[in-house]
Length: 379
Image (cartoon, rainbow, N blue to C red; front, side, top):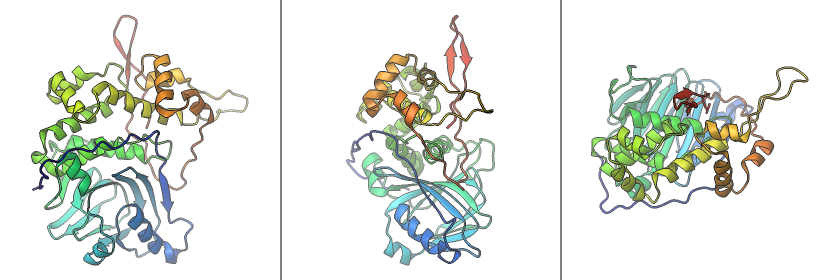
């Protein structure tokens, strides 16, 4: 059971001025004899220290995003095994909680509390400074989120996890370890979606660190999570899932998570923001990610490049006024949306197996007030 810190108050970390570009590390091109050594060195700096073993030359890639407190990564690689021994912990203490979200391949996790088998769609939450071993017999692709325990204590009063926790985040009805109706599934699924969008090869959708901290706090605390944290996490989950719906508002969010609008406003006010402000911030970051994508090259010589206007993208991201969007975008990021559309180039990362994020369908209204489906925003 988690231990709570008394009188903990959430610190307000500053909002970054713009999205962070992921850093990519890959063993491709490195001499086979040095791959394990360099992989260990990179992980010790970017996530946590590990001893790595591989029967064949390790072919692995890691995409990392560093937030002020949280670290987010997408890891893919060939068959290998890792171990975090007491000696590694002494040499490289992390004092954090890790969430491993399996996307591809079967993974085995062993620690003093027992052994766990993770299949695609399974998440495991554990303490990083308790010895463990992991094995990927057929390779892997996974998302990883690590949070310092001090940050969880300050944000939600959760400081300790007695034993690893497994939660499914895949499609309900799958073979997740906790069953189809696992209460933590929506939070794990939202965390996977945020981490996936933050570590994609194209321009990323910058993760909201408050949301990441709340989601991990709920996964660690389970039923013992403070109500304010659980409500905050649920509301932010719902907003992320419905961000491109122009009708999204406090009444819909409050009804979806079982609160009154007044209660919902208090939850966000206690966190130093408001529902409309949070939705606006996330839509602006979504628009930044979409605008930064280079339009596809023409299918045939002489054809014009198909290109959406800034106004088109504003509508796709949930804005109903292009003028309002343009003004708020420039106020938030310090440059015009049209400048980003014309001049940004994001080179793809070679050799990284990254799937597109889950598309969100947005709906607009016809002249008679009925909703109609619009194109998805692919992230």
